[in-house]
Length: 438
Image (tube, rainbow, N blue to C red; front, side):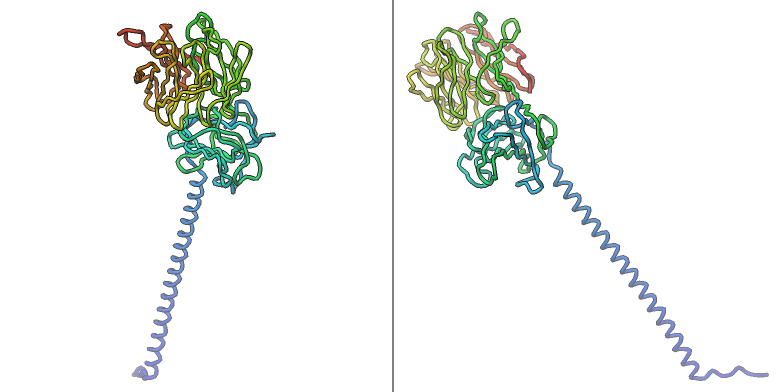
């Protein structure tokens, strides 16, 4: 019987070395595999991080492009029917959402309020940046900016109706030529502009800023007080509603002027006139034709009344900067009466029936009239009437010799006449729809 050969020490040593080498190779292979897996995982994490950063950047870019939508119904800041070209650029300061408006021979052209608002900034001296500019606050945290003006014709605190004159187009400040720099802002953000309730498309288009302005007075013979509107159209006219419901037309002024009613001749009927905020000039119809009176300061609002009770009306102004009525006499002297607060709107009428026109103010936020007589012992009363945002009017609605207050609601073009008979009879309200709603 043959026995197996004995394993030598050298062979054992060699086998152990081979086994150790194999084990080491396996360990190295496992380590390499682990390292490759870690590298792959790191690359995957880096790719995910890069993708997340790219997504965040895209989201941020999209958010930057998307701006809040204003709720104020803005219109082009120019007179009704005028054609203007709006442009922008990617590096437009402070935002590509700003508009630079131009038109042929545009230097000095009227710039008007694109919506009702209160003047919060009126810079009429700067020669840098925006130059001479105006900011209007429209409520809801929304404002508009009108920059590089030749002149600002408003003062801080003044409430401007849609289409009212803001200033004249210029090239002041950081401007390379005549144009209007215009912005719509929500909070501090310049937003994508909207005009006439639609997103603005840059290019050439016509202004739809053709608002009606409410009026009331004795304009037609034998009919008592009528309601009327001044239409800021390309050919401005006062539309008067007769007792038969038909409209009579009276041409007057420019679209950016303010209408004024008064009995300038003493014949017992009021006629239409106009006031230019740019020149502070009243243009009125007298017996021998039209005549002019220059009166007031920058930012003043026109009023009229029979200040001395002689049957002939005179002009005056309400100064929003210090809430003061300035009543001009036929000889050119003036009387000052302080009433109201910043933002109030002036209203005049013979509240006590003594033949002398009295004064008053209307707070649009609280719908409160504050009325002051001009008798030897003045009486001040307050009356709540109308809706928030209404525009005040006044007239002798029932023919009793005393003026009563009223309002006009822009949203539905409705006059709300508050009729307060003498004695203890409770006031009643009569509504008349007239004019074009906004």
